[in-house]
Structures are given as C-alpha cells and as structure tokens.
Image (cartoon, rainbow, N blue to C red; front, top):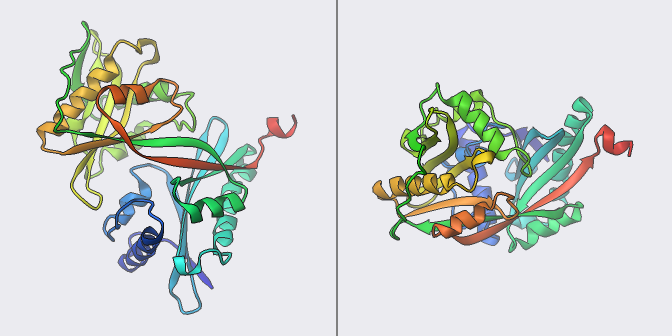
Length: 323
C-alpha cells in the first residue's frame, strides 16, 4: 500500500477524491448530495484559513482507496486538530480506518511536542452514520458537542427591524475596518467552545475569495462610528441552487440584548431575498452561551440536520499532567 500527500491543484487527484467521497455518500450520506470535482477544494478548506495536511492511501494497483485530512489550530492553550476521513466502502472495517487515525494522531501530537500543551483530536459525524460512529468509538473517541444546521425559506416575509437609536448599519470597508472587525470578532467569540482567534491577515485573505461580496459584509456602528456588531454572509453553490449562508454574526458582549444582532441578521436576510435566493442556512453550536439558536429561530430558522463532534484527548498540557 502506498501513500502520497493530497495536492488539490492536481485535477486527477481531485477526481479520485471526489469519486471516493461520493462512494461513501452513496452508502452513508454525510453531505446529502454528490460532490463535484471543482467543488472539492472549497469543501475541504471550508473558507477557513487553517493549514491543511492531507494524505491519500493507495492499494497495490495504485488505486486511491482512502484519504484523510487534518486541520490544526491553537485554542485557549491547547492544540485542536480536526480530522476528516473517507474510505472506499468496499474495504470498510478492514483496519484502514486505524491507519488513518494513526496518521492523524501522529500529526496532532507533534503540536504537543512543539508547544508542550494539551492536544485534542476531533472528528464530525452525523447521528445516522453507523460506520463512521463505530470507527470513531473504536479508537476511543466520544461525543462531546452537537451542532445544528438551520434553514430559512426566503419566500417567507422578513420582519422589519430597525436599529436602536444611536446605531446604524453599513457595509465593511476593507482594509480600513479590518482591525476593528477582528477585535470585535475576538471579543464576541472569546470564551466559546473551540474558539479560534482570528487575525487581520486571515480576514483580508477571506475577503479575497472569489465568492466574497461586500454587500453581505455588514457592521452596526454607534454614533461615533465605532463597530459594535458584525454579520458576514456568503452565497455558496454546493451541488444545487445558490444558497445564502450566514458565516459569522456577533455583538460586543456589553451591548448584547439590545437587538443589534437581530437587526443585522434581518438586514442580511433581506439582501439575500433581494438577490433572488430561495433559502439561507447557518450552523450553530447547540450549547452556544449567547442564545444564538433562539435568535435564529425567532427569525424563522428551523433545524434541518444535526452533527455530532467526537473528541479524543491525546496529550495533557503541563498543568494537567502535574495535577
């Protein structure tokens, strides 16, 4: 059996990986649709500015029979790594899964050797994915978090929501607004589970994505012009009609419960509606401490699917090891 690194710029490799992914999809749906070759790079990177490590496993005839990819980042003094894996259903449960996990664990644990901190390995799974759940649990992973994907039809009326007195909505002006945007994002998300601080460089790169549209990149500013809430949307076409996605939304913690998030979200929905999109979607942590799920439901979103995050602690940080 041979291995090689994933090169998403190689059209032949993208074709192989899409075929493997869709073979898995036929047996045990994860995305609930077929994935095209051209769509694969954006699906794997998921608009995130993380370093991607990928590996392909080939049989003795040189045919790709499995692949995995790992994204690692620092979170609150720990190294968190996200592992995705796909195996030809014809060889499910033949120990190939263990080979992929060994590879992923070795890469993730390199962070502990370098930084001496706690290391976690995560992997997502749908509740209906019997094979994937069994593979994860066999390696010692356990469910630790639930996420929900919510959807709202844009044919339904959107409530008319006005900004509170002293506040107004405007589009982001990049790059001038990015330092304030980054500070606001980190204040809004800091302390939430698996929070990864963002940077001006990461946000500038995101806004160079060909799918970025400034019309969906909104701020609420106060009377002095200081940003106090943000909302970022994208239009993504993944195996069907273009769909609006709410990627990020947040408010300065001291100004929560003033209705700023609701105002921004309604404004973004209205822009999606004006651009003739049929639906809008978003993902939310089921245990989000800011009550985000209630905000979305109050604006007409309903859950269409859920996802389980499985986790495995690979190494303790110094403070844990000594305790």
